[in-house]
Amino acid sequence: MSERVQQRRVLTKPCFQDFDKHHNGYVTCSQFRQCLSYLGLAGSDQEMQLMEKRYGDSKGVNYLQFLEHLQPTERLEDKYQTRISQLSTRHTQTTPGAAAVIVKVDAESVLDKIKTKVNKKGKKTIFMSS
Image (cartoon, rainbow, N blue to C red; front, side, top):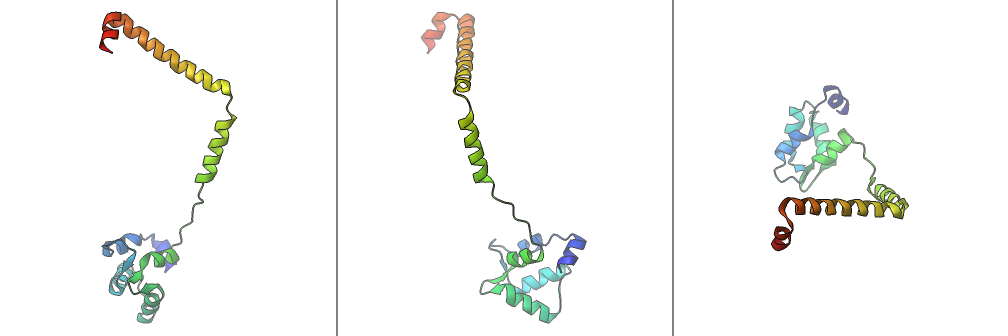
C-alpha cells in the first residue's frame, strides 16, 4: 500500500478528514473502507478486517495511526531549548559598553526629537500642552 501511495503521490489524510467530523482521529469501519477504496488502496475482505482489528477500537478506526504506519513522517528535533541557551550565552557575552552605546543613541534621538519640536512650535506651546 505504501508503495502505491508513494508512486501515485496520493494525499491520503484529507480523504479521512472529510469523514472525521469531530476531528478526533477516528472514522467508522465503513468510512475507513470507503476511504481506502476511494484512494485505490482497498484490499481483500480479510485484509480489511485485519486492518480494522489492528487500528480499530471502541471509538472506531484510528486513521491517524494507520496513516503514520502507511506514510511515516520524519520527526524534527526540538531545537527550542538549544536555541534559547544559545541566545542567552550571546546576550551575556556582549560587552557592557555596548549597552551604554545603545542607550546613548536612544537618548540622543529623543533629545533631537524634542529639539526639533521646540523649534517648530515654540517653547510656550510645547510646555503648556504637556
